[in-house]
Image 1 (cartoon, rainbow, N blue to C red):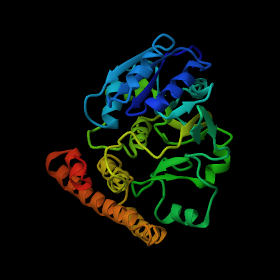
Image 2: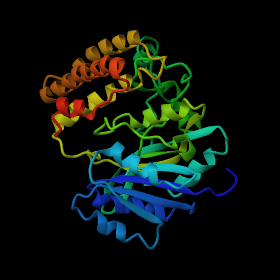
Image 3: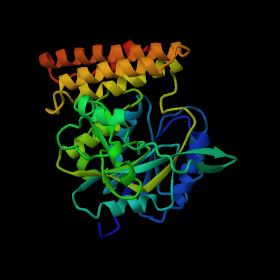
Image 4: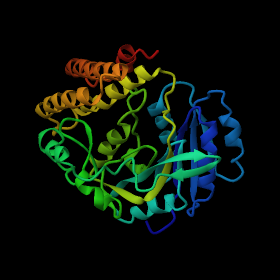
Amino acid sequence: MTNKPHVSVLIPTYKRAHLIGHVLEALQKQSYSNFEVLVVLKPSGDGTEEVLERFEKTLNIRVMLQEEGYVTDALNLGLGQAQGTVVAFLDDDAIPQKDWLQNHLNTYSDSNVGGVAGNVIPAVLKEGSVYAKNGVSELIPHPKEFMKSIGRILWSCPIKGLENHLVYISRAGAVAYDSNLSQYAWHRVTKSLLGMGANMSLLSKTVKGFKFPSSWILGLSWEQFLGWYVWKQGYTLVFNPNATVNHVVHGQTLSRSQTDAKKAALNVMESNLLFYRLYDLEQNLSAMYRIIWLIFSVMVNTKKICVNHELERFAWIRGMFYSELIGLKWLLSRKVGGRYWPLADLKKFSGIS
């Protein structure tokens, strides 16, 4: 991109009055200035509205109220109102570095790039200052390990066309990371599906008319679902380590009404359902790889979760079981009546009202 395109920065927010001000302050300091800020606010009575008002004179900010629904519903609202050539996604607890937007836009100098994943560095907030954990990334995996290399063959083989991608979808329908690319990803642009909603962008034309189906609560794997959608249009997606945000660690997500046990089970359910969301859309998914992946997951995770964490183990087993049950129901229903992704199934099995 040789001119200065208009960018829409999309931020869904809920119960983050204590953090979103730091995010907006960082946006005020961006080296790139031609952007609007779209905040999709789900009211909670925590004073977020007052925080947003403080920035109305210094930022081109628009606030949209979300009366109901979850994170993907907020994204649908924001995407429907975005006016920029590029849409950049930012979490309400992700503080962008000064050249964050400029580095995203620089990546689109390749005309075939349709989306960019940026680096996400965990950080802590102490006395109003952000302290990043140097040398750590929430997206770049640890270098290759023996079990991971075996896994690439037996259960984490990429779907055709996503080989040599940092973040990819496996033939088992799971989100996976290529640790062989770790050493390169820190220093150069690398092919990758979209990584985390805390830091990514895409050309708005790639999602014109797109809407997430209303079958998410926490929104697990929505980024890869969207990345797959853009990639299937023939665009290249990449990871740029220079487009960086500091992600404040505090142990909460955009959906905070459920207990820890319910949230843990729902995390597993939503992550595992990506296979079933894509099954009739992506021909390179494999039921055989899915079965191998399930067997491996049960073997590794039941061993990893020690006896002292009974609640966590129960939540994980519950999530695994119900995700396959829901997924099979979706598959059977689609054969009769077309695409079928009801939110009611997740609510029923997770216990979320």
